[in-house]
Each structure stands twice: as structure tokens, then as C-alpha cells.
Length: 255
Image 1: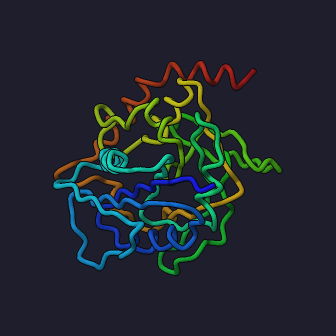
Image 2: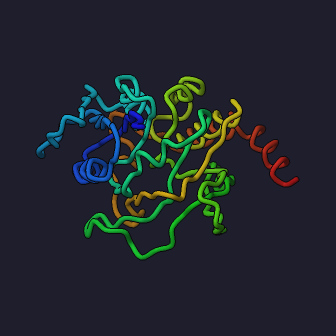
């Protein structure tokens, strides 16, 4: 049975979104739509011409969080997938990642991408993650524990690739920009809201994605002149909002 999956790609001046879209198209096995959200710019390079790809242009730079919200708002799928604009995916990712419970957020096994060679780097993959506060912010840390479970619960995710049901997105609500700012801590916000509502964060190891390695430059990390990221304020806000709840969770995890 096909599951209609809407894939949202927030984009800011990174031409690699074209290769990302091609990887998504080539490896899909079911009914998908891809929505590339141009966050306050229009690309000077050629668009991907495929009936499964739609484009949304935001008149001004609004930041990654609002770009994701905008893409979701025009999407049509039963399931939602968020992708960064510099990634590749495994065959059948759409079928595998939508085999889920209605209150889950699911992320696949994560490898690292060399965007110059456009190939997976020879580095250890990441499955489950722990959640910690480091340097005044919530941070996901590789758990470095490998077992044979094909699907396993996790305490954090990187946030560059996840799938959830639209009905669950409607329960936890769209990404908030007030307090957080336009760019950061979106994955932690989603996971905290999911736990609060009785859901789970899961890693499905039956498929994978590869995300551009941090050693290569990115376009969104420091915001834009018209829309600065205000990262430090956002990190502080996230801890103010979720710090006490996180302490409660830590007690539960230690039992």
C-alpha cells in the first residue's frame, strides 16, 4: 500500500538541494511529493523538472523554522518528512520510514556525506543518541551502543531527517520561532513536545540517510543579515522552557 509522503526541504542558497532532490526521487518506491522552500531567494541554477517536485518561494528570509512550517502548510501527504538540502537517502526510504505508529517521530540511521565527491564518508554511522546539556544548550550525543534491534527508541536526533504523521504534527503543533529564533533547537523542541503528548522518538535502522559532514561549509548556520539567528538567546530560551521537564526525564531514565 502506498503512503503519500510530503518531503519538506528548507533551502537557503545551497545548490546541493538539486542533488538532494534527485536522490529522493531516484530512491522513492511509493507516492511522494517534494516541496523545496526557497527562504527569501530564488536560485540562479536550473530547477528539477518533475511532477513530484513543487517549489515555494518566501518573499523574504524567514529562517529554517518558518520555512519548514510554510512547506508543511501547502503539503498534501498523510506523512511528513523534513530533509536538509545536502543529503542522500537509501532505497525505499519512503516505504520504510512510514511504517510507524501514529504518535512516533522516526529518523533513519545517519551516515556522513562528502558533498564534493557526493558519496558516503568512511566514518561510523549514528543510530540512537542521548540528550545532554552541554555549553548551555541541549545537545544530542551519539550513544555508541549498537544492537540488533531494527527499530529502537532514542533520546535525541540530529534533526536533519525525520518522518511523522501529519496527524501527529497537528497534535504537537508547528515549530515555534518566538524565543528560539529562526534556526536552532528545532529537533529538541519536536521531541520534547512529542514526549509531553505521549509519543516516542524512534530510529529505524532498516534505511539510512547521509548528511553533509560538519567540516564542509553551510549556508544557514549563522542566519542572514536581515534575519540573524540569535543562537545564544535561543539556547537559553530552550533550557528555560524545557529544563525542568528534562530533569524529570533524567530521573526516569536512571531508574
